[in-house]
Image (cartoon, rainbow, N blue to C red; front, side, top):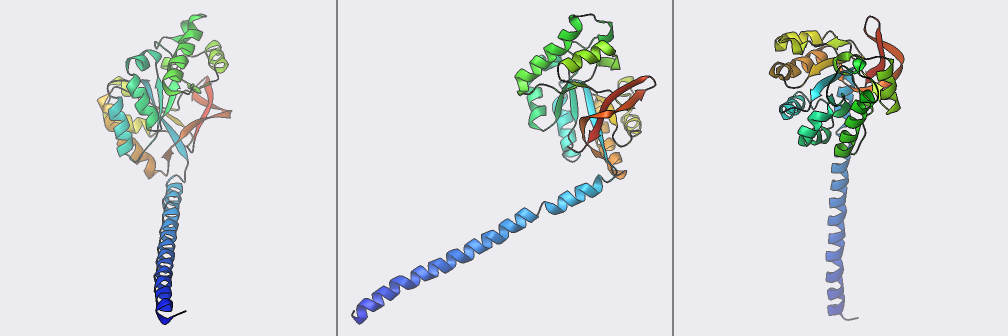
Length: 255
């Protein structure tokens, strides 16, 4: 092989080696960066666990969706990406289907609150069953998921109401802390009432009130000061007393 040929061959090899070295360095840098990204969330997760050291409570809203649903979703987002459970009526879900979608898209739990918000314990069959079934069918059609949680309007329940909910695959959910937001009290009073909740408990709030909307950050901050976080409602075998003589089987846990 001539000297010229050797030089040409060497000149072809050297750039390839340099290219390989560059690619190797770039891959190493990417790997390091990926490692940092992968490790990044560990600190927030640890911080979140510390913030929730004293447990979880469920923040719930009845009677929606309403024209104010987007404001509630925004307030929960602004309070720290907080997720809540929304007990929706079938009639309102038909009126505001876009807000049912909004709730689902933002990770909130959608539950059954009857179709027309009657005193269920005064209804006979099949009207009682159809109140629950109709709402389930509406929410299933809108979200692709049938509700697994149910709350009777006004907390008015009896053995038949619970049996119909169970037949439809739903757990009846009442509450342990009533915010009394429907009584025209101030945002601070709503928050003070809600913050009587204990770990594992469930807070009753409602959609459609400006005062309740203003109370959301107060409640979230008040829970955080006690080492409590907003959680998901799950069934439990242990009875929970809502008020004297009335129990249900649900508690708040990590999402």
